[in-house]
Image (tube, rainbow, N blue to C red; front, side, top):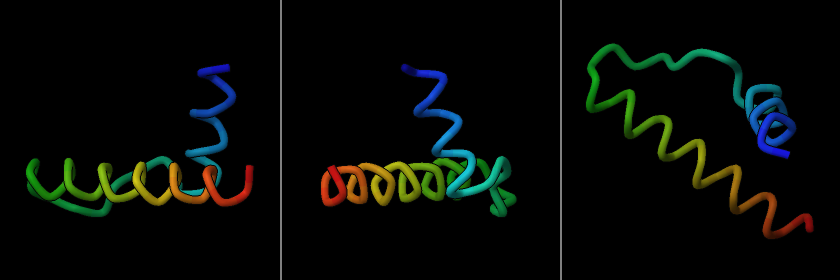
Length: 44
């Protein structure tokens, strides 16, 4: 199930982050995870 969720996440948001600094990378990933979880809550 984890592999499926990770695959869906990568399909939606891509495999890479666009930020260059480590702090911004973490913030970008956190935002993507928040959006993903919000979409899952609405759609399921």
